[in-house]
Image (tube, rainbow, N blue to C red; front, top):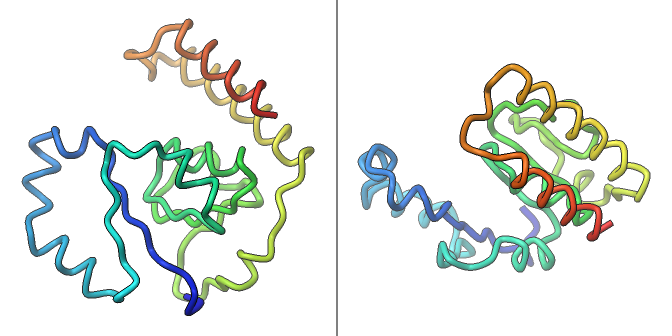
Length: 152
């Protein structure tokens, strides 16, 4: 990690409410994260993620919609988990050989965002068709796509 960089850690607000997640993350979990570097900073979970993304050079996630938001803001993403967007060219799967300097130099162009958005829409439709999405209404997705369209 470049010396002038910091690692900002923001828990998903629901993870602090969800008992099963809280049970797996005791004080030692957080102390271990802090021991990684003196440049690790915990951010209040109520902080707007987009406010953080705007000022980041790169975003690192397990797997989440934060990756989608980051790509739409033109930020490369390093991901530890698996997702439907794994093959997008500005999403980098973490491994021991990862080249952070190369990732930081990558530029996401407007056409890349449109391609990503097309794939995203196709995948949402497929998920919805397969009944994987139970908790979201069509209105939620329409609002989400409207926000992305306005952003672009």
